[in-house]
Image 1: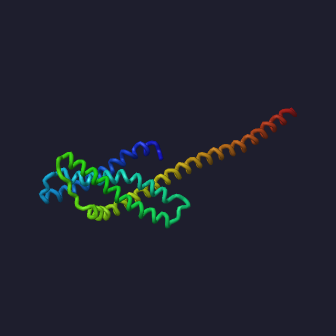
Image 2: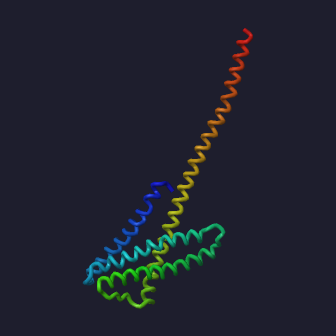
Image 3: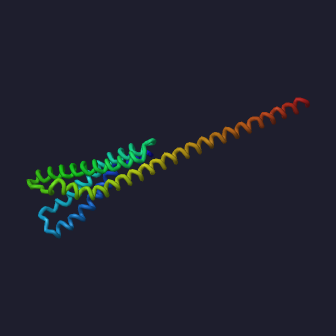
Length: 192
């Protein structure tokens, strides 16, 4: 990864997830206003807390996927690992979202009633399947990008090495030729 890519990665990462959260917030806000909601900030809390939780968990999902894709890991272990990762992701995502929402509602002096835990987990599990798959797909795309960067750097290094080898070979061919010509000139002058 180039130094520019490294410097821009985390700001771009934060901007991406903030954009996702803002997009869903605005969509939910329109629905909320039509439904005569009393606190216009609520849709932003709901959706931004979901996006923030996903952003935090995406790093763990990426590392988990890297571990599952390690050489020598069987496909059955990887498949079971992805399913276990999804279950853990759903519980962690729900806990992070609900925890942050409860905190904000408490600070605002309001009561937060999301519903029963099984209904919340059932509702979130369907959405989390999509976000988990999205995070896995983005992670695989990022790994492919990094692999391409490494391969391009390796090709560039090999081309430089090849150019040096060609130059050295050319020098080896030229030096004996000049030595032969010099000795030939000395021998012809010597007889005169």
